[in-house]
Length: 337
Image 1 (tube, one colour):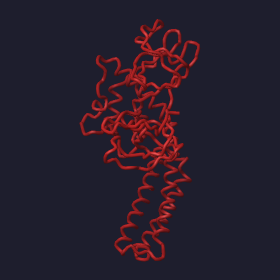
Image 2 (cartoon, helix red, strand yellow):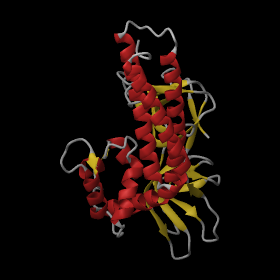
Image 3 (cartoon, one colour):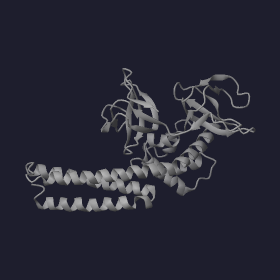
Image 4 (cartoon, rainbow, N blue to C red):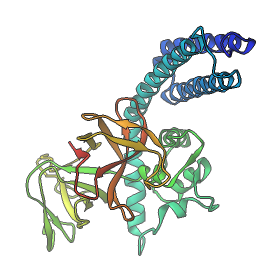
C-alpha cells in the first residue's frame, strides 16, 4: 500500500513540506515582485501535481489498495496546496497586469506606429521577431525586435518584465499567440456614431462608415494628437474589418473611443482548451456560466469546425486557454460585456 509503505511516509513528508511552502508563499506574496510570486506559485502547483501523480503510481503498484484511506487524505491535502497556489498565482497575475499593461500598450503603440511608416507595412511580425525560425520568440529576440521597430528607448529591465508578463507558460519563449498579445491594443466606442474615415485630419476625408456604440476596434496606428488637441487613431473594426481613422478624444476632452481591456462572459458552460484547434486539444477545465474572461487574442473563425474561438484569461483563477464564443450552429457560449 502506498500510504503505509516507506513511500507513503515519503508522500506524507512531501505534503507537509508543500503545505509549509505554500503557507509561506501566501504570507510573502504581496511583498514579492509579481513575476516572482507568479513563478513561485507555478512551482508549488507543479510540485503538488507531481506528488499526486506519484501517489497514484505507487497505489497502482501495490494493487490499488488503500484500506486506511491515507492516500485519499494526502491527495486532498495536496489539492488544498494547489488551490492556495492557484490563488496566489491569480492575485500575482492580476497585479502583474496592473503594473505591466500600461507598458505593454506603450510598446504596442510605438511598434505599430513605426511599422505603419514602412511601405507595405511589416508583414508577419512574428516571423520578423523569430529570427532563428524556431517557431518561438525568446527573450533576446523580443528585446531586439522592440529595439529595431520603435523610436522609443525602452529600458531593457522594463522589457524583461514585459516579456515575463507575456510568457504565460513561463518557459522563456513566446508562442505566436503570446507574442501577438503584445501588439494588440483594443478600443471600445464610448459615444454613438463615431466616424471612421479614410484619412486623418480636420476634414477627415471620405467616410468608411460609422462605428456604433460599444463596438470594439483594434489599433493599427497612433494615437496622433492634432494641433487643436484632438486625438485620432487608425483602427480596424473587429466586427467587419473596416479600417480607417477615428477620433478617440475631441479637442474639448470628450472621449469617443476608450482604450480598454475587453472581457467576455460565459453564457453557456464550455471547455477552456490548450490550443486554438479543437482536434487534439486538451481541456484545461470547464468554464462555468457567469465567469469572466479577459481577451488576450480576439475571436476568430476556426475554418474546419466553423467555431469562433478566442484566447483569454479566466478572472477566477487566471487559467489561460482557448474557448468557443459561437458554435457552428450559432449557439452563443461567450459574449462581450
